Image 1 (tube, one colour):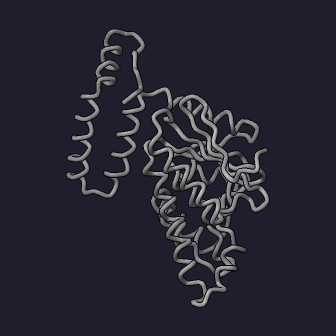
Image 2 (spheres, one colour):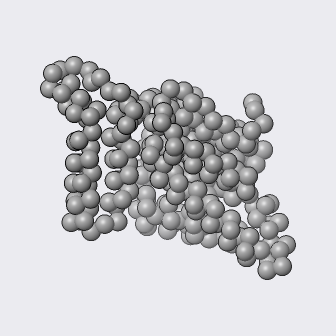
Image 3 (cartoon, helix red, strand yellow):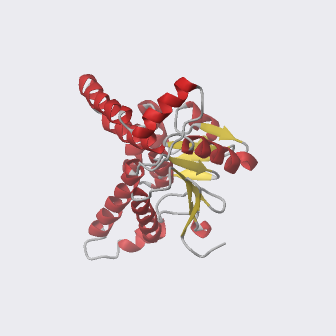
Length: 265
């Protein structure tokens, strides 16, 4: 295994990002946050990647923030306030980048996804989990309420379920995570990579330009009033319909043949 903190592998239209810090359970250290942010910035400009899979090496997907690093930041003259603010700003910016990259991002979760690691799963567009994976926002157990993880969770999971997780610090298993909408699929651990890859390949087989504008519109319309949401998405439908590959896709459907997409737009 490479010593690189974040591994990137491009396999056709699918890009795999692998957090490679098993010694601290792929914690979101300063260095890991920087690597992830850099990778997502690069993906914003990619002309070939149509789906991204985010995964981790070792026993866990991600154990959240690096508490040892956070503790060290408190040695600053202001008790660490400025350093902490900077940390949470950078983490929040990285989480938001996941929804802003044009490609759907799939979390491939195993082991544990705790605190900001659970936030990372919630921030991804889709998630596949291995049986036995545990999810939690358990900071309250050490006196630290998971306020920033709650932002992503509360936008994916019913609020009473989120609030229970936040205030009890209890873990939920993968089956419960699927029931409340945190993950899409739960599979045996040995099938995790194959199931995630199959989902990624299925999405990557669709017209990339349509998926890109669809993802953008999905998030843009969520918080709009109903009439404004329809106004926005109507304009997106027009944009989509005028795409030359979409015209080809409709023609191919009517002609009962496979579309000849160039996937370049």
